[in-house]
Length: 143
Image (cartoon, rainbow, N blue to C red):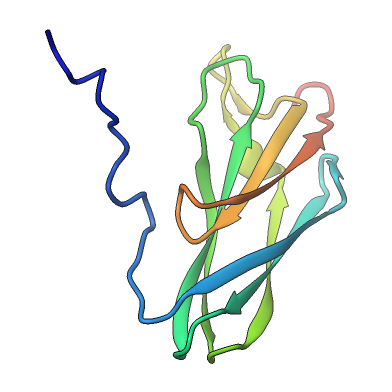
């Protein structure tokens, strides 16, 4: 009997994982607006704080997840990242912009475009340890 499916198979280190001499804390994930229309930009802001004893640098990663699509999509897609240097105890907001182009994919009819629906923004230090918030995309016909 194979034990492959019976054993946990999570990676030891998730995508984007990095080692540091300090630690960072993420909080206050905000989306403005919470409903995205064609031609608009969604502003994603998260506060990052150096919660350790040493100065350090962190790479803040932004992922998008399509909750319901006409085709199977990746669980999360990396759409942006920012490198932030913080002194011990210092905090700062990190801002990303998400637009319609960030939601495009090859649809069932093999055309490149978007679909209306609910999406999730995920922000964090790697692909596993993430803050998340949902938003709706209202697509125009033929998008």
